Amino acid sequence: MSDAQTTLQELKEKMARFVRERDWEQYHTPKNLSMSIAIEAAELMEHFQWLTIEQSKNLPPEALHDIGEELADIVIYSLSLANNLGLDLSETVLAKMEKNILKYPKDKVRGKSHKYTHYQE
Image 1 (cartoon, rainbow, N blue to C red):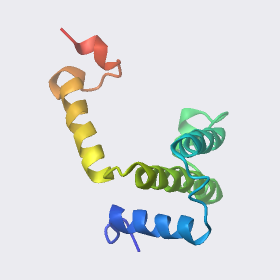
Image 2 (cartoon, rainbow, N blue to C red; image 1 turned 180 degrees about the vertical axis):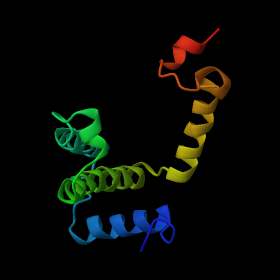
Image 3 (tube, rainbow, N blue to C red; image 1 turned 90 degrees about the vertical axis):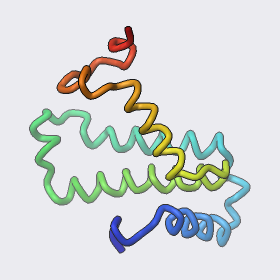
């Protein structure tokens, strides 16, 4: 199934079932899950650590596969954390995007990379 065919809810339910079938709810606390996300993010960064910008844009298939697995781990733990905290990820992401639209007005930030505080008047 592809991104176009799978909903976040389906992924969250699959993750909840996976955790429940293994009796891992006792370990999947917000603290542990947030730490796991950070750990997996660090593992993702390792793949890019010594690459040039150009190399990071032109990855060989085996590196892309490994990077995809690290990214999947981040998403998996994020889904589990959302389940644990009762967060609706779609609502949360869309609300955050609306906040970002206000923090980074396109007419002021286009082609720039400053932190949002730089654009506040």
